[in-house]
Image (cartoon, rainbow, N blue to C red):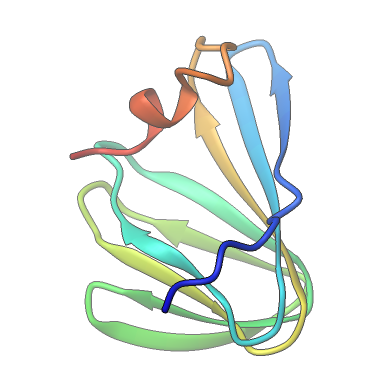
Amino acid sequence: MSINIDLGIKHHFSTGLYAKEMHLPAQHYALTHKHAYDHVSMLYRGTAKVKVGGIETEYSAPAFVMIRAGEEHTILAVDDVTWFCVHETEETDVEKIDKVAIAS
């Protein structure tokens, strides 16, 4: 059984920069995905286990995590987490942003 939860996603834009803010409740995770370019993520609040390229590392806020191009990654909230994914892009349409940011 899958449960849909509200991640409280907020979109932040600046010239050439996009940050996706999400709130993961304890023991929930962001689905495995990858990007076609390097990007940085920021753990703003809480503790998270981040699996990148099959290697899991635990981070406590505040922490920056570098995600390299093509590396599949998953974020598991150990406790309640606020997480930001930061991307370089000119796209500002929230309906299109995941198609630009996430590689297939």
